[in-house]
Length: 235
Image (cartoon, rainbow, N blue to C red; front, side, top):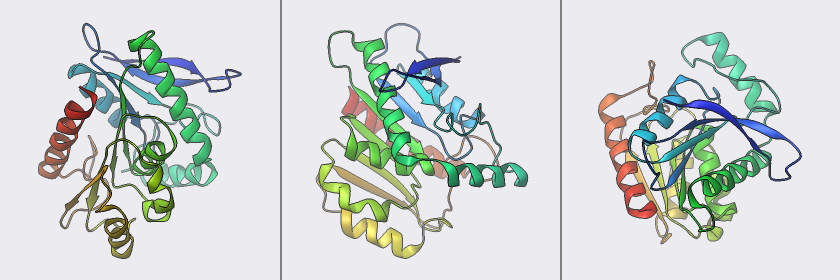
């Protein structure tokens, strides 16, 4: 359904690749799909295609473009999993948020023209963390994070969150220990803009589109909550 395009950075001095999927007819809003450490792989592209089928313009920026070209890795292949971890170690997350902001601008320009079109984001793993950072650092209209890593270390930014945020937290996440989950609840449960959902006994990656990590029942539940969240906050 979609294809790769390029969009300008915030500075306008460079451009970077983005997977774009568009609905038939006018888009009601846009959703930025934020990658895991595995790049804009078939699962992320499928997420975009899903949102396009539901009437949204969907854009997935290739956030690793500065350190690796066309990252497309399979988490179920050990060598590719290790390659993804290596790329993660080289990745500048602050710069990644700026590239997400550039993608927000591109989305608004495409669907809004002179008006301020609504844009949301949804991220997974690394992308879940970046979705939280995006909520705190940009004017994104709504943000969703699935099994975001290290959000407990970002709680100092929570007061900058001005628009709704939804976080999906599997309680047996091997990358987010129980104490980190507890800190997230302690820091965010009373935040007027943030909603947290726990998924008992599930591990990291349960909502991936493909592969061994997926738990179909829980993924469908989480995705239905995300769809309702965007329907409410993006219109």
